[in-house]
Amino acid sequence: MTISELIAAREPDWQALEKLLGTYSNPFRSKSPEDVAQLTSLYRTVSSDLALAESHHLPVRTVAYLNNLVGRAHHCLYRKRKLCLSDFTRTIFFDAPRWIITDPIFWAALALFWCPFLVCLCACKSDPEIAIEIVGEKKLEIMEYMYRYLPKMEPLERISSVSLYIFHNGTIGFYTFGLSVLGLVPGLFLFIYNAVQLGSIFGYMQSAGIDGEVTANFLEFTTAHAPFELTAIVLSAAAGMRIGFSVVMTRGYSRLDSMRRASFQAFPTIAAAFVLFFLAAIIEAFISPVEHEWLCDLFGVESLTLKMIVQYVSLALLIFYFVGLGGIGAIRARFFQR
Image (cartoon, rainbow, N blue to C red; front, top):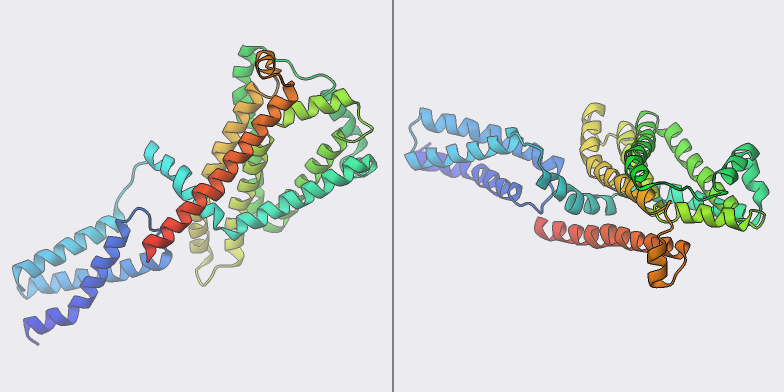
């Protein structure tokens, strides 16, 4: 076989590797496991071709071309990346909404939480006895006592309470995530059980038998930060379910490799949940327990109405984040994959 025949026989693999490396340099294209497997295989093949080219003294330009290909492939496979703010920002504002909005497990977690929550809220609002059966009379009495007066906090107390709320919200998230990972069926059961409990409490606190002032205080304290906090709980469960399902449905991979792939896919969801828990803690500390009399006087509204506005703005931001940024990201990713 002549040198030209050898180059012609091996050139399709070289071109395939060069094309694959071009896709890796595209920031809008997601890297599938199949891409990584193909890159690894072509990297080994072209490395062998490089060794063969050097030993048989192929043309210098061919050797340099192969050396460049092998170096780029090695960089893609073995490069070390440092965590930086730009990576985290990109994950939160580009990768996370796109991956979440196209993840069926997220939609399943959303349905598993909000359907029982809303059903129990409506049922317990019309019949408080249902809430007593689900939650327990003693716990509901404690809830009524807690919200007999709207919590009052000084400015310094509100600042110090941020860390407390972040810790509390984070604990809920890790608890939901961990249960979904370690025990898929028990985790799903407890996730739905918590949705039923929360929906029952929300419905009971708005029922006709509760004092109007208690109901107003409850809604005033929970309304503003509820969208971010409840959505973060759903995201935590979705991330845990993603890893938990990977143990059962491995799709041909070993269980360890399946969990590794699922962990990579679940990271943006966890990152988004962390940000939402943080935002919920800020609102819970600085908006929920405060009446903001000067703002109410300025806009001529009541304190509860002001916090409902915060709730609607939060919902609008969530819709923009998931549907807007996520939808745009999914379209761009599909376009650049073609």
